[in-house]
Image (cartoon, rainbow, N blue to C red; front, side):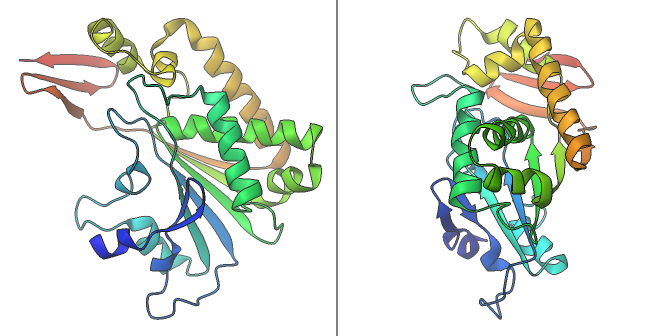
Length: 253
């Protein structure tokens, strides 16, 4: 695994190419069939390596987007996006709309994702990454109407084929709201975390989903949504463990 991670290629700014793993015996394998783009989710303390650590298999330590997918799609270009997804507030945090604008440029204009109508695009988002994908699609629609239809219109109408959501908080996150209630006075939350935790922001998520669903029907995108069914535990400090499952929270000391 270590050897693979050191070979990750920077395509454009915060876009990383994992496709070098596609065919180790033939590094010149053409990757002209499709683009599969991965978006990591919310990170508690550091997001710098989330573009790769999010997608490492816990059973064999493989960076599976670049290995397992390659077995089935050897001509795919596999990309992973890095963006500031910190749960804790810092001077580098940016609102979701700003993040989407930056990534839209990096992906479509810079890395040329979705620029070729003969090349399919699949987007994969975990957690907050799924909301980022929705906002990127919104931004692409806006820019297709107002600026460069030949670029963003091709991405929307001819290249993007599907979106895969894994544990995306489409309606907000009850866990985030509970954490804010328990720890809000101790930990300054980032704008993204505050949005997820704000029960009054339900209309924001509804509006985002409504616009995205309308785009899915208009452009005939396929979507697949998976949620987590097993308990999620994480350590806040050595004496406090939160375990979240199906909408309830247990604090154990």
